[in-house]
Image (cartoon, rainbow, N blue to C red; front, side, top):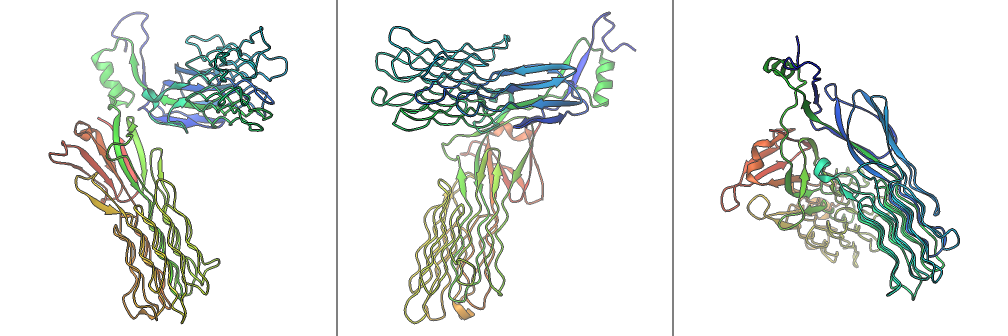
Length: 584
């Protein structure tokens, strides 16, 4: 039976790709879904290196092609390398689909200050090097593959003595070096493909920025700035190299400063989105049959912008005969209120909730760090372990927030926190008469207290109202103390545990509170350490998106709607690792 509505010569095609996105940072083979026949592919070639030696032109970005093609089965992908060392062009990226090869051209290398001083052609052209007076040097041409639409733009021309031009980018030419103020040229901007693929890659879907040109001090206040999309910055200070482009962006390398060296281009990337699409003229019966066979495209949900609160698991505490350090809280990252939201496209997304750091047994040794929590491009780091004199080294370990140092015959240092996630723990100490104490674990809102006669207090957590009312989370654990000390270190507000006095005279140490990322309280002989508090991931979306959000995983994960005045927002809470499907 005809499936084209009876129209002679008309061919019907349907792709049931469900919007699946695959990102390939290296050469690989990608197997498409059984119903996929059409894909959208972003092919980014390797970026060119800057010119070798000082004051080199910025490297051209790798070519970028964002194209819809017929594809099915397994697709071989080749991801081009960035140009390396300085003075080398980038390498092509390609894929083969239905017997046809689709390629993007490697970025052109930037020119060296010695001849030839013209930029090299490529996917985007390399920037020219510093010119000889009266004879400007041109940049390399872009779109070397001759594609429509173009894959890249030309590099800038060198118009200023001793200052080089920027490499071309996927959406703009590289800037010329300017004789008026003698600045080096900036790299051309790359292309943002997030409307199609969401936030992917190291630069959130902005790829193929050109490298900035190199300059000479004092002829240039600074080297050229790399183009958005991974381009490396140029340098101008004496003996300073340019900056390498970011890997897997196709960015061009930045030119070196006076007596400095050039820099490498960034490797490419290939991204494939399996499309839901039907073309042709279909009868109602043939549509029904295709739907029953699972080969008819379904309606895609609109992308959803989320505020987020991502807290990692708190660290566990160690066993210590003299007073263990309190453990650090899990890393705390949030966009709420007023920060940059993350947009997710239709499809299934894994949400990872960091587990609690484990305690050390009474026999001695370190506990373990908390597990990382992950939402899209946001990763919060697990809390650090509280230190112990019975464990090798004795120091608190680094983490989202750092663990406090253990009590010892000499003071023991604390672990550091991670920038924009937490704070350092407090140092452990000893006082005459054996009154040694552990330092407090760091918290998201403040560092752990240093130990004195008592254990150090755990660092404060942070309050956040993403769920509609303020809740404190990510507090550090209090430090444990020797039996002669008058009191234990207080728990950090926000789920941190309290420490213990040696011998268990009062009170017992406590674990970090579940789903707060709180750090465990410090131990004392013969007590073992305690576990940290597990992490949590909370997402907040506009109310109309609620029906398209489907929560997977254990029953402790949930979806709720906030009442006015929160505006009917939808809040999704992950207390354990699970999945979030965005579908109609």
